Image 1 (cartoon, rainbow, N blue to C red):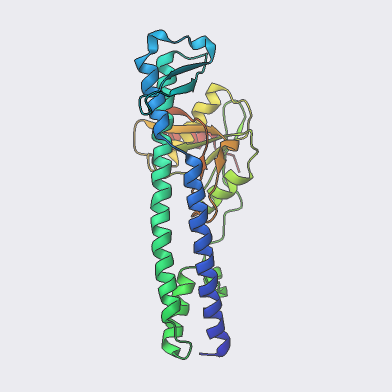
Image 2: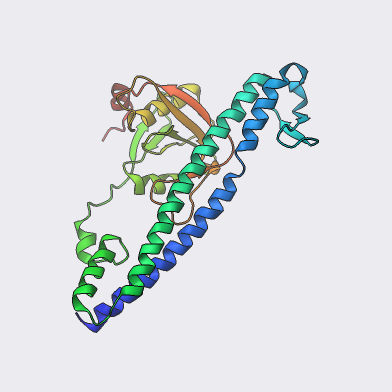
Length: 283
């Protein structure tokens, strides 16, 4: 084992530990951004409790916070919706935020466990032990902390572009082919475009190249999101609909993982493979 290889292993371990520290910091910040999801549940419950005493056209209401006796809670309302519909929106956002927070916490637990192992490995490393250095170098290659030409060339080349479809309204819809491409598609899309992803299932990121898509385009794009997901074999699949500007990626998060702020709409659709074939861009 050459001195340069030993140095490479030492530097890679340092880089990896620093990277994991940054990942943990980013995940903790992301958890704070999600905020206190429980207050959304309280707001939904209060709206249902006082439904007959609230004027939806006012735009907001002030109600007693049962979690904090003596204090009131200001609840903003969508005047286009009934009080019960507003309540359901708060419950929906509560469940979304809670799932998002649970995902962040899972990644945080894993990152902290990884950091412990990385620090332990660094502490136990003996630069004079050739066999140990070889073993750790291979571990670091497998963990992508050391890049090699062989490793790079063994990877399948990235597709030139995502899957492309044109809706009945002739609107371009792009669908990611893998997690890395999902990231690129989502993070480079215009902020006022529409974005879709199946609820609670693995699937492709979908971007609609429109700032004001028709209902037909939304339904067709949602069907594409459902078809290119783990829900392909189901009859009905819920698909979340947001603006790209609502999305952000925690620093250090794995490819394909994004979080969102604000509210998401949900369309329940059939994953239609025949429609996908019909709308696919013709080569």
